[in-house]
Image (cartoon, rainbow, N blue to C red; front, side, top):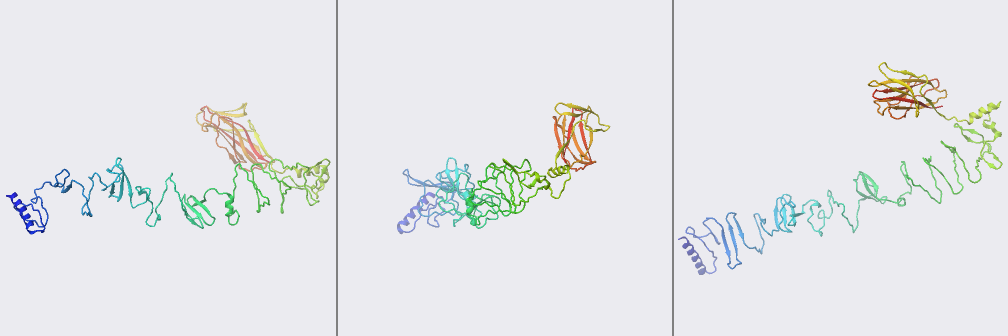
Length: 538
């Protein structure tokens, strides 16, 4: 009776519709235990037995259907839905299974990993709130559209898009705009640089600053260090200088020419105004003029000095003239034995020269009288002789004068005086014993009566090999028992000159003692010493 009751209910309902006219109606599917519904509508499967339910529309090959999937509690609509009004959803909206999906959410979007079904597809990454656009549905390539962060997250914008920090069109503090190598920045309008009357106290490498005081562009070449940007002609710098004066604030100003020349040309006068003026040159130095030229001083002496070689006065035309406004000029001899002034100038027939008038030799010292020719010669020798120090050398060859041998009771070896065609006389020390075996040669010499100072000690030596641990020669010098200096232990397989400086200042009557230590260890080693020299000045 169940199905009969349902049909009866359906017929009764339609009957009511026909009798009543325009009243609201409902199609009621009911069983024996249900006779009414609470509101207008269609109730399908009220008894809740479960199972999928299908409602089909049409039966001409283009029909559609709405299916209720009981297992997933979802509706399955076979055809597309055309919504004329808005769509609101209180729950989740998920298009993940659509073959023409355009928008979806992903926890994480990974380029090359997250599947992309359609080019232009949009995915919202929920973990970072980033929006990604699919640009390749084969390689699953995604580009971020925006991140709310810096410019590196705007990869998805098209070439017509523009970069801005915020709605005031300025790049805010803390943001950085970087142009990669190979990229070009074209500025069609004005490029405004940071400016000021003084360079900032601090800067980082690469910063640019325009100084309005000197109208110059500066770059930061090192931390807190500004340099003028680019090459600049000296003329342009001079033209912008306020007082047309090169000022170094008391520091040195150097011009390094290398192998080039430094030319100063002027149609007017070139002045060097300084309390002192020095010109130091390690090479040749010359001053030449195209007309009459002068070297003069308004106060003090004018000195021409040559510390090495000759002082040459040369005139390639007629003569060299020395003039003085004081005709009573007297001869004055300087402390270095050079004539600083000449008492007379003489000219002989056929030649002009600078000389000392023979008839005025007594004027060398007007206050001195001579009683004999010998006295005159001695006076001349005193006045014209050099009083500068003369360098000399004391040389001693083996066998050394009054040499003594000093050896301990435990050292064993053989000392010989020998001859070498290359070196000459020398001492040779050898041993057959293992371990270091030493011997000392000592000789003394009196200090020369004319000694002023002593210099280096030079000596010749040779060993069987160049290892000082196997064989070595050491030389030292004493002055009246005080050490004047010593060499280190030296070794060389070829005859070599050793040297050391001295610190003593002996005087006439002192005694200098040379101490020569020779060491060999018996493993085919040998220590040889030749001549010994002492530099001194008198």
